[in-house]
Length: 154
Image (cartoon, rainbow, N blue to C red; front, side, top):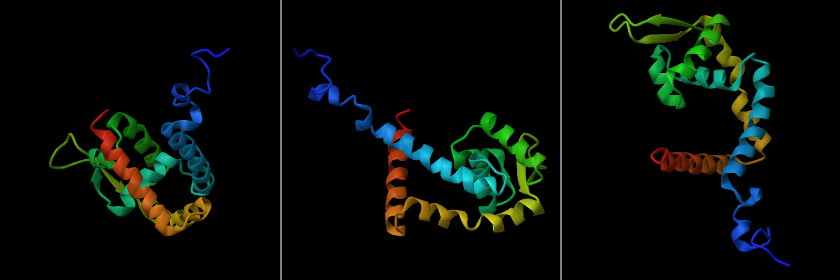
């Protein structure tokens, strides 16, 4: 006897977990974070802290809002992260001279030196994915396109 709840029906197959793009992204993200956690533990950084450091290694002396724009994070999420990185001696926070409302983030010498220790992480991630560089570049571009398409719909 078949019912509307029959999981084999085509309509219900659309709701199978393994058919969901969101779950593929979510589970891939979990797996990727496990690899990052292992690599970043040697630097005593969490993944969100690593992202902040990547922004600062690319361009130092930036505002909290500039970091937030790059990472798609609001200041309420970013501020505690920055405070922990400051307590670890990796960066300094200070008010802008031209606008007291803006907080400027600057790497310390220790934060700058940490960049050298982090240089092998991208290659280690590439190796962990078992993809070649062309596959990774294509996947990254597809994910960025997906993000842009979804950004205006949220």
